[in-house]
Amino acid sequence: MSELSPYPLAALARRMLRDLEARQSIFSLPSRKFVLGDPRRDLSVRFHGHTAATPFGPAAGPHTQLAQNIVLSWLAGGRIMELKTVQINDRLSIPRPCIDMQTVGYNVEWSQELTLEQSLEEYVKAAMLIRILEASGGLALAPGFGRTVFDMSVGYDLAGIRSERVQAFLHGMMDATPVVERLRRELPAELGPLRDLDFTTRLSDTLTLSTFHGCPPDEIEAMVAHLMQEHGLSCVVKLNPTLLGAVEVRRLLHDVLGYAELRIPDEAFEKDATWDQAAAFIDRLHGKARSLGLGLGVKFSNTLIVENHRNFFPSSERVMYLSGPPLHVLAMNLVQRLRRGFGDRFPVSFSAGIERANFPDAVALGLVPVTVCTDLLKTGGYARGAGYFDELARRMDAVGAASIEQFIMRAYAVEGAADITAAKLRNTEVYVERATGDARYRAANHRKVPKKIGRRLKLFDCLTCDKCIPVCPNDANFTFRMPATPEVPLSEVRQIANFADFCNDCGNCDIFCPEDGGPYLLKPRLFVSREHWLADAPRDAVLVEHGAITGRFDGVVVRVADGELIGADPRAQALRSLRAALLDPEEVNYVSEFLRAQVAA
Image 1 (cartoon, one colour):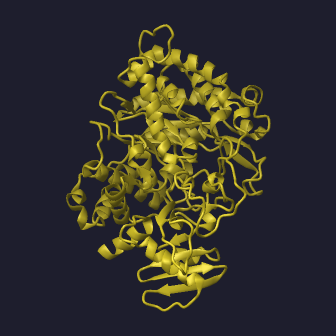
Image 2: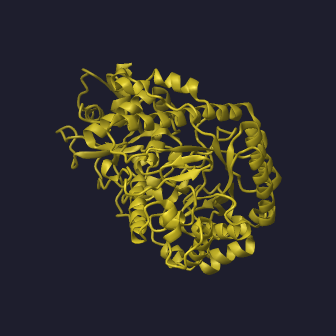
Image 3: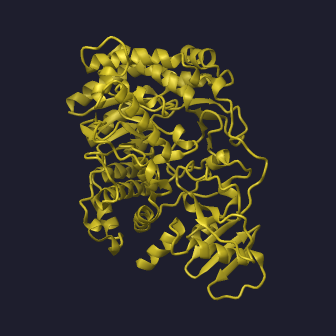
């Protein structure tokens, strides 16, 4: 099983800038899909005392785990980065595959797949890469459109948060000076002045607490109180959709939306906080935050735990976690309930079924940030973010709004509100009623699965539809040019490969690939680390090194070194052609840039 392996900053920086110059893309995202802002519209919002250039961002999940994930989210317009949740138990064994996007959205992964120390370094690397991009002059950013907030996320119990290693992570995020200076020295000399930039060392002073299903309410309160008192962090509490209560959740899910097949275990309601309990501890924590000069917000919502009724995940998984369209309706009803009880007293961040059509509506409710995960795992991946901003611009122009505040005031053609607070409350009532009755969230519209053509993938050649590339949140799949030779006849010049150190076997590319078998399993799985290649045995995989390439096929190892006669062995011929193609001077990929960075060092 592949495990995520962070990539050196020097190689990431080289890959990023060479990609931009040579291909007008970054990490496989074409520049035409970059969201760079428009001076005609001010999309900025406030988040716990910070200004972010947009209210949009990736949710804590697969899109904010590795440095290149975060850069891609930033290029897609994300300016409030809800970083992947970390915890003391950072050696998890996660079932594979772990993401099922065939219809709505299910997963069985719920925390980081890196160590705490690796996570800290990835977040620092991401911030440095974004700063390099801003200063490089290669992006036509609108004035002020680079303003970005990194929001930490931790879980899942007080003992874990108090542990020495989690404490070190928190301190490192609030003062990353040692990590920044160490990584600065790794940057290649060819970057010139970009090596000496004023990289931020205070990556974050805000935190979203992720509360796992069944976490007792007093534990939640204790965790937030500790984070505020001991670390001076403004906090957001992520809450579960079960707060609506068993009767209401099942009414909405089964009767209104038609997802009759989804069964929520009774213990999900028995163990989770009730609405009254959550309202009480939020109220108390708000008072504590004010006394400390900090902010407190809530987030709707966590995923919904349901019984595993499908055959996609391993049979060992009794439950799975629902996201996507049905969760949108549940979470919006929670926003309504909160605002009916507390008005606009608490800032609300949101993550549930956000996509292009409803992103402007969430913005119109004054939700900050509006984060997305499920939709970015669909065809197009990070490129879908550009559509969010196109739709927001269209909606803003339609009501003559040049700023987010103006849009909140004018978004819906209903009687005007006296002020921004009244507008948020009015808009909430209008939109939640619309969304709850909107057919696009109903089960009948989410039964269709991606098409398959009944053909199995091979090592080389396929439809080359490229669908597997953007749906990978880690940017593990990529294309390269490999001309046919008499020894290695090919029908396509463009081939697809998988950079195995970035692949966690989530299975998402298999869902959207029209052919059977999964690109992450059957396309060339490439390693640049002998240690990782050996650890991946007995699976078929290829190790690319300076002067040699080694392949493992059905347990047989074939190695080809430079200048070596290889005879008629077709596997050796294919390996030699593959290495030549990957390391062609015109190619920009993770294999070539890793080896070039090693030479430069």
